[in-house]
Image (cartoon, rainbow, N blue to C red; front, side, top):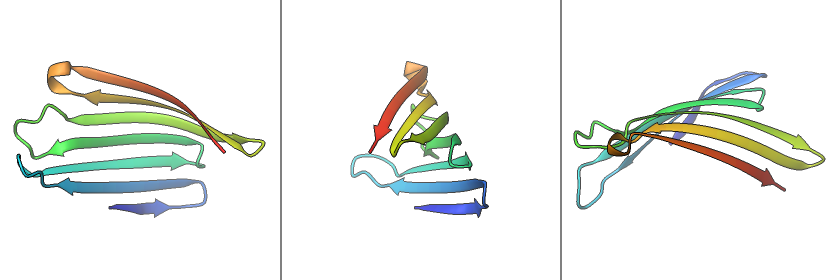
Length: 98
């Protein structure tokens, strides 16, 4: 579930949480937040598998930009995740929307 905790003309703060109850393990809670400036620049942070003692996952951080040119949207995102045994995972994505 997500909620715009702050919504102003030039910025927005969205917070989100979800919960999972797998049949073969303990419950999992994930939380996160996104700060958007003019729907152009985005800053994100979260925590995966909150309260799970044996979790390999943990804090996540990200940044992104999004813009439109001639009716076509472009976006670029970078994400960093602490993944325990696999250490630090870094992801980069580019996208186009019509």
